[in-house]
Amino acid sequence: MYDFAVELIKKGLAYVDDSTPEEIAALKGTPTVPGKDSPYKSRSIEENLDLFERMRKGEFKDGEKVLRANVDMASPNMHMRDPIMYRIKHTPHHRTGDTWCIYPMYDYAHGQSDSIENITHSICTLEFEVHRPLYEWFIEKLGIFPSHQYEFARLNLNYTVMSKRKLLQLVKENHVSGWDDPRMPTISGMRRRGYTPESIRKFCDMIGVARREHVIDVGMLEFCVREDLNKIANRVMVVMDPVKLVITNYPEGKSEILKGENNPEKEDGGERDLPFSRELWIEREDFKENPEKKFFRLGPGLKVRLKNAYIIQCDSYDKDDDGNITEIRCSYIPESRSGHDTSGINVKGTIHWVSVSNAIDAEVRLYDRLFRVENPASEEGDFKEYMSPTSLHVIANAKAEPSLATTVAGDKFQFIRKGYFCADKDSQPGKLVFNRTVVLKDSWAKHQTVVTFE
Image 1 (tube, rainbow, N blue to C red):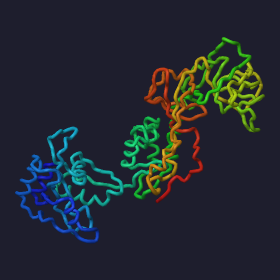
Image 2: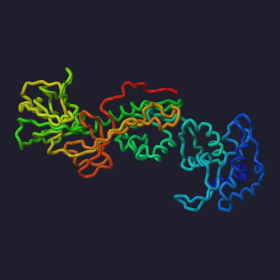
Image 3: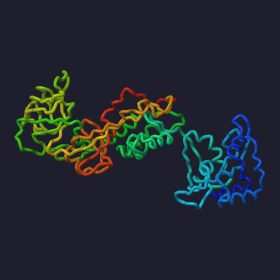
Image 4: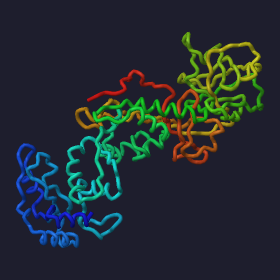
């Protein structure tokens, strides 16, 4: 970059300016009023070369001098009115230390960096369209590899923000746990949440590239990850809100190993062992004292199938002083074992379960939309006021089947009847942590407008 700047000075296309930032801004004029030349624009090539070298050696203070391109102060494009190429900044660099105290500006370095790397297509968002003439001017005047800049509309997802400035605010002000918070629209956040590269690529293929600003429904992205995980994620049983179920006619002390299909979408998905015993955990929501007519789960006198196991019937239950169900007692039908059912009994409901004696503890983090409005950036006031208070719900005492004991961070599963989940890096031996990637069905179906043009 430095050598390129020297070359432009030698061609009379760059000069050192002593003006203050305020003076430079005033001389630039307005979009409708042409700018005026700096009094330092007439410096000789020799003087400019000497001053620029002294800038590099650190002889001047921050802001005392800048190097500007000698373009056209009357250009209708404000970016072409002798833009700053180098400024002085006496701050140690994290890589080069104190070697340099002058640094190139983005508009100057952009095209040269692309050219050095032989970039043929430099892809930018639409706001850089007015910067392209300057990008091309530097390349043309230097006679270097002709990289070309192309602009397209940035990707905007609803119920989040994509601005790096706004995302940085969320991180610095601790509204999220970091750049890899699973609610963040960052690659690290999406990876931690369980999004797969294949699902992101499919999403990008679906939305394509456009030059018109629009907001994409995040439901499209969720559809893509749901489609991919359905093919690759093993099915497991995890009880989020456990309540004990006792099978009264199942022998005490007895246990057996049942089989569960890992993934019906895989031809060679295989099976896993499911320990079954007298005492089980089931979801609290799968039982009602006074069930509605079409409640096909458990209630007094109702029958239901335990996934991969037996048909059971609810006989009685206990409650505490606050009216909470503490235990459900059922009887099972021995002849109704899944895959070997000779009972002749048909039931409409199937629920998942975990054996009490074999369950492992897990923390489950239910992630949802980060914001409660579709386009927080367009709302009045501080965008952070529109953050959703329900974007994260932590379940600390979930019960998981024992096959998950060997899970490592990044492993992906379908929790039967609940959604797709990914093991988090916070997992520890004996206490797994899972992040919800996406629910099984789109609970936001009422928001079906896929693309909203602004």
